[in-house]
Amino acid sequence: MEAFIRGLPKVELHLHIEGTLEPEMMFELAARNGIELPFADVEAVRAAYEFTDLQSFLDIYYQGAAVLQTEQDFYDLMWAYLERMAGENLRHAEIFFDPQTHTERGIPFEVFMGGFARARADAEERFGISTMLIMCFLRHLSGDDAVATMREAMPFAGQITAVGLDSGERGNPPERFAEAYAMASAAGLRAVAHAGEEGPPAYITGALDVLGAERIDHGVACEQDDALVARLADEGIPLTMCPLSNVKLRVFGRLEEHNLKRLMDRGVKVTVNSDDPAYFGGYLSENYAALQRALGLTRDDLVALARNGIEATFLDGGAKQRLLGELDDYSAA
Ligand code: ADE
Ligand code: ZN
Image 1: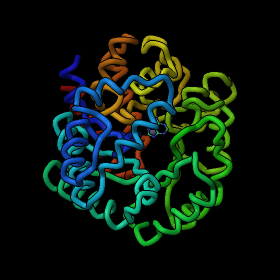
Image 2: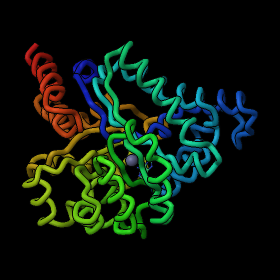
Image 3: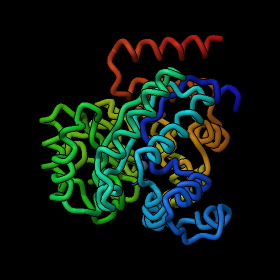
Image 4: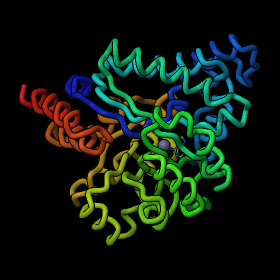
């Protein structure tokens, strides 16, 4: 089953590039940039990854991102992720980045966008992996900050496919970001948003109705509202779910309790993703494999999940059909 999962042609729709920073690279970049880390070694970093909720993770995650300074650092980060994923037959990824985490530290857009662009081009050429970028607004900051970030991003809009919304969810409803999302839409960008990870189902509804989100990132809380589940199913709104993340951040006590399969059985277009794999103990294949074991998923379930992912991408019809064809060939073989 694990070999079947590794070879399965997969897409990833919920992956924070800053969340792929492995402790080894954290130390390498800290040394390169003359930054002092509050950890003795790589083992001490890993030992600190015991989270009690989303915020306890975010505190460490934003601290880790401070080692990213130069264009080459952002190249190395993106390249390491894509090179690793070539070994898991990743075919396409729509990748989140958090510009405010970097601009707040005085790192301008040119620096991270330049590094990302170079690594993405190299991965497309070397591995045939296509990628898109989704720029996230940090929801613990203000709506005005998001608008200012959108303005700064305008010269790079051609490299960005969509906008998203992440960071601490509780007490930070989506409505505050309506103006930034409207600007993004006017610039031709698509929209997604984290909602219903730790927050209530109303944040999912707000993301759909006020922000125009076309996919919901996480969305596990929808299960508290039957009408919302029915709406997600009827309208074919994908959920980008991240099973290992949800256990690490204690959204579910155990993977066996995860609602992905229950929602799938109710007709919701659920997808499997890795969120922040360097922090949560597994990349995309491990998420599929852990879920398969915990929920007793069949090969047909796994293929259906991979298919949902492809259908939920922002790729055009032709590119989707090619990937669906690859998936059909793989599952028939
Ligand atoms: N930023 C990185 N990972 C996140 C998550 N799971 N939820 C909200 N913001 C995040
Ligand atoms: Zn996320």
